Length: 295
Figure 1 (cartoon, rainbow, N blue to C red):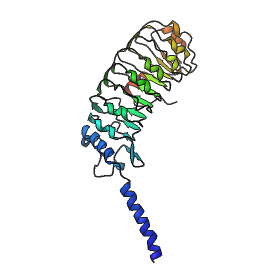
Figure 2 (tube, one colour; figure 1 turned 180 degrees about the vertical axis):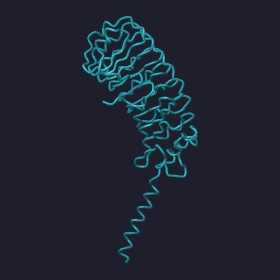
Figure 3 (cartoon, rainbow, N blue to C red; figure 1 turned 90 degrees about the horizontal axis):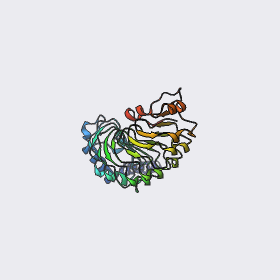
Figure 4 (tube, one colour; figure 1 turned 135 degrees about the vertical axis):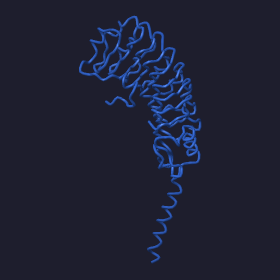
């Protein structure tokens, strides 16, 4: 009988200890509670039962007892992003899109070294972008469209060497495109529709060899339309209409054979490059939807 009970005791001990140790750290839980309190967690569409284990909280994913993902998209968050977000050191994804988040983007977010996806679009964020991105150079997706952000794109963005998607559309950004964008050599989608960018585009977009989507429409860019587009062979979507370009002479020989949409203020080029069988509007997607282009 003892031979039977001993393994049972061992099994119960292991189960008990696994429950005890399958807990998030105090620092991470404190950061989650701070986010809950600063965004009126009690009023969320899917609120958290604070008596439950963190692993059971809506939108929270854990790996090895650490929070790696928070997805509270369309969940009626109302308030500000707490600076205590810095406590989520293992976080890889933060999706707070389509809520009513106000205030500025705390610099503490850009100190999260494991962060790969940051989605804050369709909120009421204001102020300027953080300056330093040297700690979060694993970031692959940064979507901030349809907020009230302003100022220039900071030069520190050059540290985002793994960035695949940058969408700053429908804000109030000003200035020109910084040289730092040339360093984003992993970039596939650059979308800046509906801001107040101005001046001639002097950066070499040709260095972004993997670029498939370029949306610069409805800004105040002037001078010659960026001739470096001719060197991009993977382009699918180009929308540069609604600017003040004085010449399109450098875009008469685009090398991309994959173009589906080409929108400019030059009817001849639109006719030449647009695929008549393709009617998808990237501007509509940028402005109203919450999804990426599917290959």
